[in-house]
Image (cartoon, rainbow, N blue to C red; front, side, top):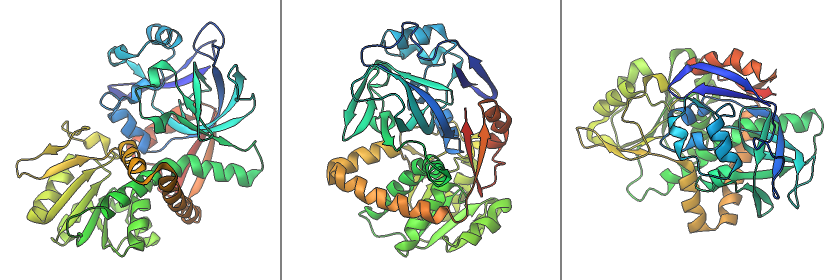
Length: 385
């Protein structure tokens, strides 16, 4: 087994660790155990948010760093991973596809394929599983306290032709982002106060931002995208924003009743925009951290308030999904969100170029560019262990 790991305090430090075991347990499969071979996975700027929020939101708990004997022993004995915070190395979760290579669980056949949350590794072992509405749920002890949406694995067809492979690549790259886009649209749509005169989206070239803009445009919101100079032409060419502004030109944004959706996490840009809008700022929603290097230390999972009294909301898509499924019913929510994601993915397929990279080592080769934001917004990266 090979696994990509990062230093939890320093993204510039990363490594690949190899072990002889593929099930993490040293004892073979448990009674309800399943081992996956990871077929492929996507890695995007969204994964860097998992790094930044690893401690606060529990992302380090999903997949123990296999070289850490204490964590591996706890995973094998079904003990909680409460000491995870004290370990140097962590595993950033990714969205991918796995094929079952060994199973002692009823209803999970060797060779069956699933889409869901995986480590950037060659294998994933689950000590215990359950089923819900046809989906497989990892119920290993160290994951039971984590959001169920991240523990759910959706069955896929057997491997097929290039068309199916391309469709699945788009699913890995875009589904996790566009379900968040949908939830943000839903949040704005459900806002009970007077509707904003404009919605301002920071890091406008990110896929989550583009998905949100695509949804808002259909509802005739005035949407302003804020992006870097190098991405401005690309963003304008997609025609989903009414106005595109560079970070250096925030004064070009009209001061009127506004909701800000911040995917960047750049604390200096945030303060400049708040000063520009003043009392016209209705709501400031912090989502991701594509500019993680410039994120202030105050960013977290709780709402914060600055000196002017403006409240920031940290948006956590799994919590919103759970709330809306309770309010609408799971079937209705999945039908509505699924229809949007499918439509948005079809739109994206007309301009997104998918780049496949072989083996785990290729992630090492591309990781610095991902962290620096040097990957073209035209591209999506897929890694095949």
